[in-house]
Figure 1: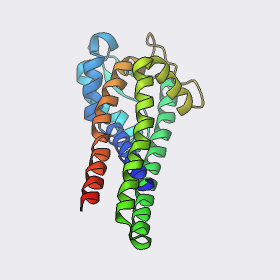
Figure 2 (figure 1 turned 180 degrees about the horizontal axis):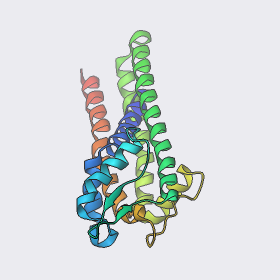
Figure 3 (figure 1 turned 180 degrees about the vertical axis):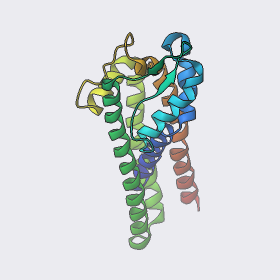
Length: 214
């Protein structure tokens, strides 16, 4: 059961890290849900902004800022200090995500090794994997129902749990970051991530059922 839960936790954290570090994906989604007419950012700048954000979140870039020359020849800075401060908090979450990913993978291997060395009841191990899937499924279903019923409440609750300050309360009228990343942006990436994560429980279920039949 613990082994299955750890594998799913690894899949979730690996997916989050993969999405956060994919500048092309971030840029494409920002352009789709927040086009230049709504953000004021020229379309040609979206790829660079996406790559900068991904690089900063994953530690490849040291500063959170993008500068470009507008059509009048004026140099423009995209983000204000409080926006950069919020992204520094997000960067901390991605670092924690990476740590949890590595720990879950390592502990899962230890659990698997212990199961192989200490137990002879293979069917019991496979049944435990299925119970782990059920436990995660109940939790995931509850969160999904909450998000579908009240996404705004779910979104706010997540941010209040994830951040110790209110730096995430940005103003669309003055802050480019929130215009580039409206709720639709996170919904789209969340759906994409969920589809990727589902590979893990499906694989676990197939392995467990095959193991029980063998």
